[in-house]
Image 1 (cartoon, helix red, strand yellow):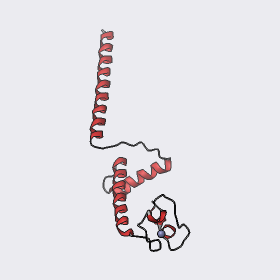
Image 2 (spheres, protein in one colour):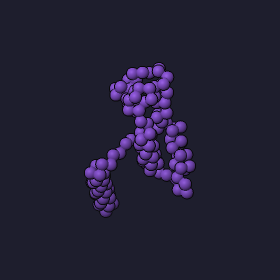
Image 3 (spheres, protein in one colour):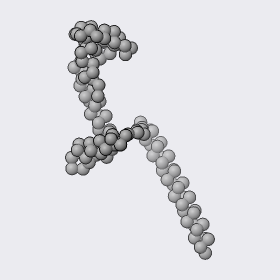
Length: 128
Ligand SMILES: [Zn+2]
């Protein structure tokens, strides 16, 4: 009798495992079809603590979940980038479109060190 119960429990556990695997696969296929990607991020203890603090501080009444917070941060920084790009125009010194013009389109600053050039003066302001 006990042996039969054990066999039933094993069978149920196996079926649950299979159901979970199938669900994970369906979810992955659904996310993939929607263009949703999953990232795995390694954080130090200090960064993880900061994330927890930020989720609570920025969340209002209910703290953000970590994924929700990071996704919101990305959307907001994307908007900030678009706003910056809209106002960058061209370098006063080089006359080239910013932010890549002064770098000669190759990430290499052509006029690094020339004080009037955007690259020397303000490029760091674009960084996080
Ligand atoms: Zn320039």
